[in-house]
Image (cartoon, rainbow over all chains, first blue to last red; front, side):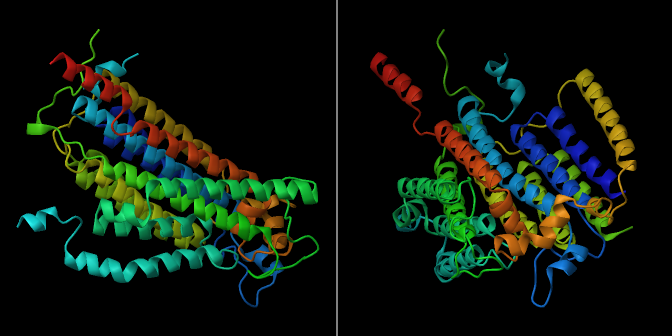
Length: 115
Length: 163
Length: 188
């Protein structure tokens, strides 16, 4: 159920990327795809009733190994969030330049981009 | 009236609240970086919060005051220094322990170590926080500094290529 | 319905509004709402590190996107691309969705971690020995900066490249534009 909902989120983002004409909408759709993938990865590593993978006071490593959630997807997603932030900065910069040059956010009017 | 227009940034309320808050936000970022070994947070979140302190100041006081506090060039140089520290720690692990990324400070110190004991994770963490915070500040100052508006709302090509 | 399903449904509603609304500013605000819901979901999924990072990154994304789009063309670009391509892409996305749901039927149910099904997975050994081997109580910090430090190095390189690209794109005034302006002024 939850996995399918994550896939729906990814599909909505994909729809926005393919269909929308506004460049900023495309950037937003890419961000939504990223959110869907991140939640999917963390959901796969979830253990019901699990605690965060942090060794707290009065807790031994053996109990953490039984109760903690999977730390590996979390580390991957932490990296992915930061890389997506850098990608978003790059895309926003490109959007600003395109607006300066064409005076609009409409990608169908940016004829020179066609290969 | 013209003085009010000339003055940069937001109004007085935003400026005074920023003056109170920016130090605390900066300290919270530093806390997250330094305590990444036992609390949630770490180099990424702490670095972004440090950058957010500078970004808040820049938004409230205006571009020139922000540049005076921390200029773009200095921020880019600090980010490069952070990346160099990261690389130096890597190479130090290779030289002292025989493998890249090996803990070059904590050899023979098994078990959980606090900040004042020897652990190379702190060096990596500080370098990461420096890189992330300064790079984000640079990018923010660049993307927010460009003010280009097209007059009259007309769609027109700003630059015609002659061919 | 579990808590995560409710949060995900709210996220989907926010995403649909963000994509379909005509005003660009409200669309950006809706994306911010989706991001903050994801932060709440991370908090309940046992990932406070991710929750903090997502919260801060989301605020930063909002600031940058709003600064980039304010004073610009907010509402005039509406509508979709041409009809034929639209139907084909929607059909493809539906096929993707159906295949994806089929594949996820084979996955273990939510709440049964993969590392419980097999012996000696890397995840369980990180949890059991991470604090002792790297000296950090937070296993995620131990993973990122201890076991998988190469990952962090690559990430620093990626962020550097992205920022350098943004700086090169936004160099103001761009050298080429400046030259053309000069030549135009000379011609006038």
